Amino acid sequence: MSRPDIPHDTPRALFDRASSRLDQGMAFRLRRAREAALEAGPAPARGWRLPAGAFAAAVLALGLAWWMPDRPGTPVPEPLAGDEIEALVMAEDAELYAWLAEAPVAAPGSRR
Image 1 (cartoon, rainbow, N blue to C red):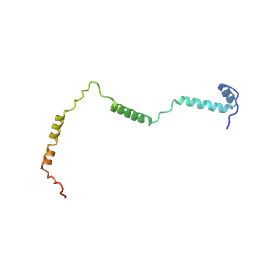
Image 2: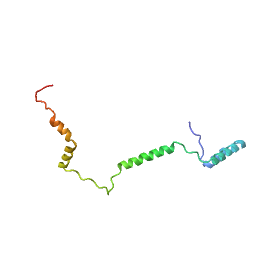
Image 3: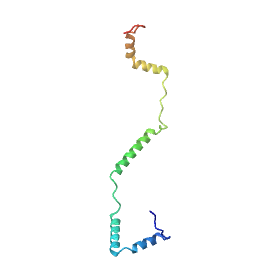
């Protein structure tokens, strides 16, 4: 499929040559179709583009909020000392430790 060898004509000259071959009826119908298309205005937007765009914007906003660094004025809590951690653990798990103290201990070498 090769193109015919066209001399170096300008696009306008090619258009004029092709237009001159049209009969009056075809030229009139083409003109009317062009005018109708121009009067119709832009094509209506697709209905799915708005929800998809809103969803993409929401995902982007959530992603930015998730990865956004802390604000400079936010106080950072100081780490707890070892004795403070032990006191918290003992207070929370006092019942567990009491149950463990009362549980029977298996003697070495005994099997159940």
